[in-house]
Length: 493
Ligand code: NAP
Image (cartoon, rainbow, N blue to C red; front, side):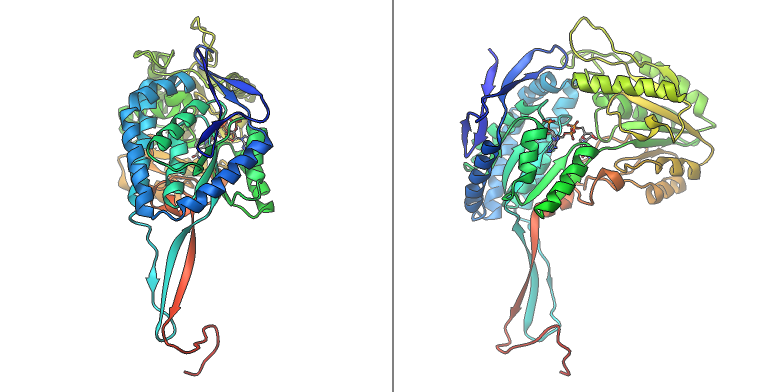
């Protein structure tokens, strides 16, 4: 029987005020996995009130003790890894090795953030005055709102939740409507690990109503959002009205440059994985392939052979390389871009169609366009599906100019055996991440993650930036001279 999941507010499951529900569907079979409640504005208010109470409690717990809850959560995630991975494949569609990786990423960030509990470092420095001491300390922000997408159903929530918790904040969490089940599982894990009631609260339902209510709530002090550029822009504008801090991780149009001196077999494997892994539904997916003209024909011939060999199917089957697309709207969006690409004059080398596997789900062929020009929409706009556009260039400078020609700047890669080419690419590609001789996907949690230009607003997640995203910095001055000393006053002393 399909389980009914209520909202999680103040440590309890509570029915929503709207009485409305929606079904959480398996994108391969369209079977319902769970019935989820649609929160109303009053429910968001209740979640924020519970979080405010949770914050008063949690803020008093020393960071190293907060971290102990996270270490326990990491252990529980580890014990439940396989169960969560299977559930994620059913809910989101990607193949089991990838969903295992998603859960592992959550385990890694949980352990990493827990370690930060004993490393909430401020700075000490000298004063311009005698007998005065200066330092900075990190303070929690308060109640923070976290809004996440569906493509990494547990890793992306964990990237936000764990640093926010160790920094001492309380949370109102709004997961993607395509993957709420994994969000509930994460809540279960944190509760079992001993997180006090109210410190995390989960509200489900459409972004257009529930997400908006979270963004607009005057008692929520910061929003951390991962999702599309359009939603991110709206959130940034809206947050200015209540002077909220807002950190944005948005889309990508990630290029791979393959130079004529590259190890072609290595590059082929990297491009195939980067473009078609997770059915192309990664913010860091390779969507633009920039080939040096000298290796272009050979590379495309070999890429085509490899793409044709990819097996599409249900993510739970061991033989599957590529699972379904997440939902109908996404499938239709991919089809729309295939049509646009053809109309713009690009050559559809391979794919471009839905696949009938005898299942009602959303399967699409890996798709390759050649003869793509930088001004085409398929070269500029994020498709978020298994669609790769191929460009040809005659040197590195042209390749880098092309790589930088979109409004996004998340991930990038160069395949070359020439150290000079590698460093020029690191220096000149406008992106938050550059890989050398590796695909555009595959971030590690101890490095900062985020992008430039339209991909974000300057924040980074994970790595040493993780706790800072969810902390206020306070400057502290301690004057032990016993007399009034005036800084910011021109003094002859
Ligand atoms: P999306 O449509 O922007 O939705 C993301 C989240 O925001 C969902 O929880 C959604 O709720 C919610 N939402 C939608 N409209 C909202 C609004 N007006 N106010 C508040 N919340 C709102 O993006 P998506 O289709 O789920 O995810 C794909 C996008 O995420 C791609 O652009 C991808 O590149 C990006 N992404 C970026 C990163 C990164 O780190 N840079 C990582 C992963 C994905 P519903 O689900 O209910 O609509």
